Length: 319
Image 1 (cartoon, rainbow, N blue to C red):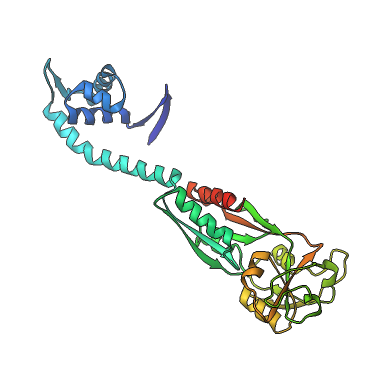
Image 2 (image 1 turned 45 degrees about the vertical axis):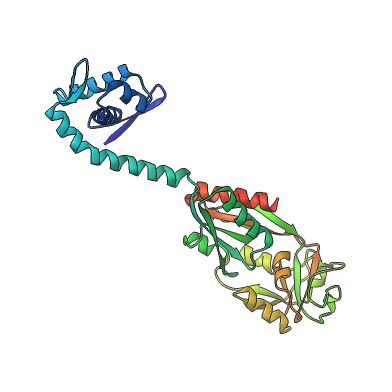
């Protein structure tokens, strides 16, 4: 059993009554065979090395080092003890170094999920993260529209860019960005699409939210939380007029195909609309609904410095 004490500015860790610092001083002295050089390596005084060695010898009950005016020599018992301790001490140092790197380091890969479309801002964030942290990489993978939080919870990605709202107690909501009016996807030629260009880009005067009354909205099926699905396809306008439920889709492309087939409209964030322009569709902004926004989320119990560093890159790239 290990017990940690605080003494001055240094931590003391004892195992079976023996301080780790005593063992460290002994092993370095066994290499250097010189008290002054040992103290320099450990950033302590020569007298402190002597104190640590005497303490270890008292615990062992025998001399480990023979001192003369010219040299330091290990006793046979000291030689045997040093030989036994070196592998264990090396393994201990390697384990501590690995733990520190995992807890504090940024190096390595961060896996990022995204819903719908990886917009220009997210691509800039990846480049910024890798520029700030040489040796680190960021990889992208799409997460299902119908399950925005599943890949994060399952550990398939370290963080994910998802459409808000997010009300999950086990997830951390990091930077929120791309706040824009919601965009309504419609079949080309729909009466509400008069402000859209031939290529589907949302332009001109937005339609009012009350225009959704009587227009079926494509919903989201699957494990997405109810509050999230209601935000994606509200059942009432802000004034309380009913909005009919259209068919449900499990993926973005399935939903857009239903829109193109005239089965209803679909609310999207602006970046997703811009990246999916096609002649069979029209996109128009909607006035009077809560803004569309994207956010970076990750598991609270798996937060690392690497994830925090990527979150900072997202905030700066989108800022």
